[in-house]
Image (cartoon, rainbow, N blue to C red; front, side, top):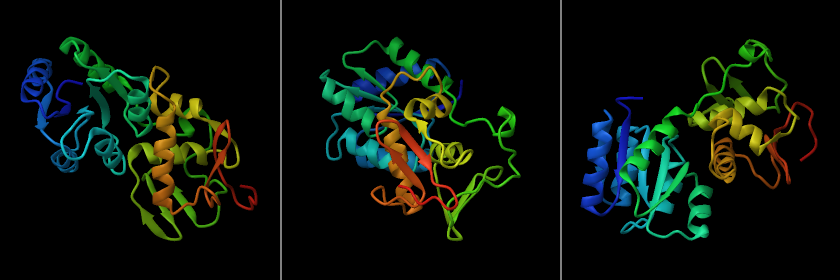
Length: 242
């Protein structure tokens, strides 16, 4: 955990300096960004482990920054805001934030939240490790979709698709039993960890990004189908249902 890279995104320099001092004291490598555009670029270049992201930013606000980051990064996002309305929390989590902290906050609490995020598992165990399907046994997936679990690669109609680690984990978990419905809570427990305390809408955000990368239409899914009120399932070979 020590040595993890943290990106602080806040337009108030005193707050960045305060948070930086506490995080560096814990042995983290800390970087800063003062606005949304710089933050998105920094995430691409630095690949941070955790992003401390202020909701109210000049130019691109924190919600849009979070939405953009979630298209290419699995970094944990701790969202900060001076507002405490429930709608802010729901919107922030619904676009992929992992945790939420209202200003004013205790720097020690922020460090504790960062450490809690870093303790969460990101990758799911291999099927063989759980007594499930061996990795060298290909599941009966919908035609055109191929998943190589050991190499963590995915192709659609022979073309490689670049998924984030979380998107791949969700897809490979669904692929263990094509046709079987997994609830949002089951996906949260397996991919984010049983101690995750955020909103289960974070699953919908990642599934939405996964579908876009697979070229999947949620209204007429070729691969990932929604089971309303329950969760998701991966369509299998010969599956004619939505």
